[in-house]
Structures are given as structure tokens and as C-alpha cells.
Amino acid sequence: MAGPRLLALLLLTCCARCAASGGKPSNIILILADDQDVYLGGMTPMKKTKALIGDAGATFVNAFTVTPLCCPSRSSVLTGRYPHNHEVRNNSLSGNCSSALWQSGPEASAFPVYLSKLKYQTFFAGKYLNQYGKKGAGDVGHIPPGWDQWNALVGNSQYYNYTLSVNGKEQKHGDSYESDYLTDLITNRSLHFLEDRSPQHPFFLMLSPPAPHSPWTVAPQYQKEFSAVKAPRDGSFDKHGKDKHWLLRQPVNPMPESSLNYLDSAYRKRWQTLLSVDDMVELLVKKLDSIKELDNTYIFYTSDNGYHTGQFSLPIDKRQLYEFDIRVPLMVRGPGIKPNQKLQAPVLNIDLAPTILDISGTNLSSVNVDGQSFLSQMAPSLRNGTARPFFLVEYTGEGHPTSDPSCPKLGPGLSECFPDCVCEDAYNNTYACVRTLNGQNNLQYCEFADSESFVEVYNLTSDPHQLENIVKKVDPAILQAMNQRLIKLQSCQGVSCRDNK
Image 1 (tube, helix red, strand yellow):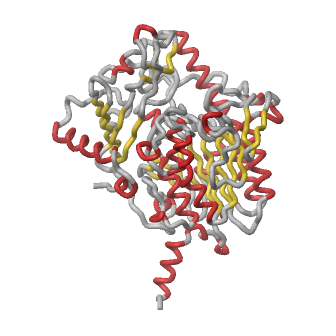
Image 2: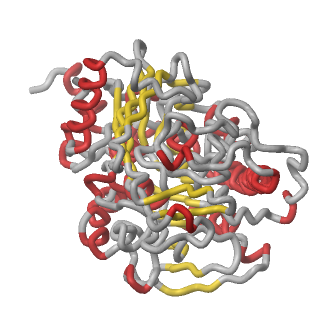
Image 3: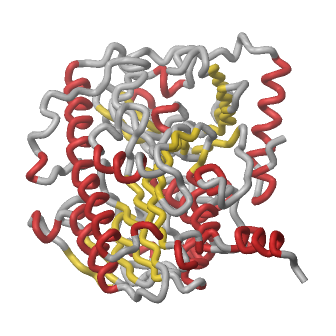
């Protein structure tokens, strides 16, 4: 017969989901913004969110995506796996985004499936995956397993004039602010769901607003905000990408006035669109408080990837290996999390699924994930755990088989090209990096699958803006060790991805 101390330990280990008063399983909300950076001030407009989630809980100052592009990143959030394991390479159907292969494999064991088995009432609203709802991806009738209420955007981010799959039925929307503005629609439907839920069972909501993704359509009440704001001019802004892979050596430098005006406008509109997301957070917290569930609900706030506006003379996009594209905001409040925590250990988007499942009481040894729960970091009274000292970032470049009319001189294989022949992506913009971040080291080692077998190495302690590629200055033994670690990570699966040796 178990003694009292052992019994208490077993209860603690088995039931973080019963962390709140009364032993009732904890509710969970995940808010996933689209293209929101943290490196370039992307959280600045969100005063309510920082107060209501960050100040009320934990802010992870070193949160990263394992791949800086929407569909593969979101697939990592849903599965807890690196892209080389869920096999979503880019935003196209041929790149496995919401494909039949994805639906029959990784999607069928995504974390909402486990929550549903535990009787969680599940609700989704907003952007799911870039190809979701398209004819080649099962059309609007496809509802991923695990969801009770489904309000998913067909295709990529829009604010007006879009189509939703509402529980498998097509619903078209126009351009009326009151009834169609997507961020507000997500908010309103989530509030209705909370009002109509069954109090007997816990709930999980995943809210995925379009902001601050293009086309940056601002709610009418916020169109005059931040009128004097421009993209920050510090760090790597408009610096030539010398000693970097060939795609970074191409942009015009210094940038032409037309590009500067364009990226300043984009930066300003991105902030404006986020004000509606800030309102969403405030309304959700008020609703949770009014239904007496706030103290028993974990609220996660994050983004699928970062973003750049002028860094290394690249106008606007993501897809690059640098800090501005791979760092994301991450804040969490909830039972057992003390307020005003600033946590330093690295956390990845593949850690969201195991953390959410850990909160729910799922036995993580029964789940096929590459990430690890970070519940122990933000609520050490509930869990013991260790932080990782290094991790993998990987990306498979996307291009077109024919020359881009904006950039015919570079030939085929490019995509996301701007005027003045500035291309943001290419087939051989394919790379894998080891990012090391601990008390002793703050390093990045990256290898490209290109004709040059290009390597980039940065010491972010002495060079936080990654201006100098030090590959030719580093001890060859250190380079070899990093190469071996990268090879191991690129083929890791499950528990081997968490081997920190």
C-alpha cells in the first residue's frame, strides 16, 4: 500500500490538469497569431495582452519556431514534431500542406485528438493550414479529427471576402466590418462557445486570427493609429548580406526609397491589425472571469513564425534562418504559474503540443512527439524537468520552375520576388541549423543544401544581429562537433530529439 507521500507524488505527476481548486480538469486556450515577430517590436501594440497574460504569468524570452513559414510551423504546433518528421515542407499542396498524406498521417494523431478522448470540448476558429479547404485538400467538408466546433478559413489569411468551413459546410463572407472582419468573428464565436459550453467538461479553444499577416486590412477604428511609426532602423536593417548564402547577397543595397516606403507602410499596418487581437484577449479574459473559469484556464499566446522588414535589405517576409524570423512571442498564464516571470530557457513551437497534453493529464510517453513539455519551467510546483541547451531549425526552400518576371536575370528556381530583383525564397534556400543557447554559449551553425554547400556561423553573444559570419574563424574541431550534432538532429525522432548530449 502506497504511503501518503508517495500517493501525493503520484497524484501530482498524473494530474496537472487538476491543478486548480476543486480538482476540476484545467481548461486551455491557445491563441496563434500569424507572422507576428517579437524581435522587431511586434508585441509593442499589445498592451492588454502583455498585462493580462504576460504580467499575469510567464513570458518566454527565448521562444523559437523550428521552421519560419506558416504551414510547416503550424503543422509542428499541431503535432509536436519537427518538419522532417511530419513532412510538411512549405505552403503548397505539393509541399504536403494539408495534403491527403498529412491528413491520413500526422493530422490523425495531432494533439486535439488526445484532448477529445479526455472529454475536452474543443473549438477551432481562424486560419488552420494554408491549403486547407482547397479542392485538392479535401474541400470544406474535411474536418480534422478531435474538433467539436470547427470554423476554419479556406486558404491563407484574409480579413474580408473569405470562405469558412463551419463544421464542414461552406460559409461565404463579404466586406461588412460588423459581420465579416475575421479577427472579430473569431472572437465573437469563441465567446458564444464559452457561453454555451457544458460546465461538466473542460474546454480547449484554438484561436488563429489572420493578424498581422498580409494583406494587413485594419479594422476601421484603428486605421489612424501609429501614423508616425516606421520600421526600426537599427541592427541589421538595410545592411548588405556579405558572407551570407547567395540569396542574401542579391538584394539592392542600400534599399530604394520605394522599398523603404513599402516596408514602413507594412510595418505600421501590422501593428494596427494587432490591436483587434489585443481586444480579443481582453474580451476572452473578461468572459472567462464572468463564467468563473479564469483561475482554472491556461491561456497561451504565440505566433507561427517571426518576420522581417528591411533586415539585410530584404523588404518583407520570413523564411530565413536569422533571429528576426525564428524568434516568436510566447506568454502563458494559468494555474500554478506565478505572475511576472521572465523565463530564459529556450522553448520551441514543437513544445506546445506536449505542454498542452501534459496539462490535460495525457501520459506523454504514449504520444509521438519530438518536443518536450515546458510546464516544469513555468510551474515548477507541478512538474520537474530540464531545459534543452540546443535545438534544430530547418527549412525547405520553395521556388518556381520558370523565371520570375520580376527577376529574369537570376533564372528559374526563385519565388517571392519584389521589384529590383529582390527574391525572398528559392529552391536552394534550403537549410538546417543547430541553435545553441545556454549559460555558456549563444551560437548558431547552419548548412545549406546548395551548390556551394554554404555554411553560416554566428556568435550571438558578441554579434546579436548576425552581421558577421565567423565560419572561417572558428576552430575546425568546433565546426566538426556542430556538424555532427546537426546530422544527428536532422534524423532525430521522438525521444532522440530530446537527447541533450
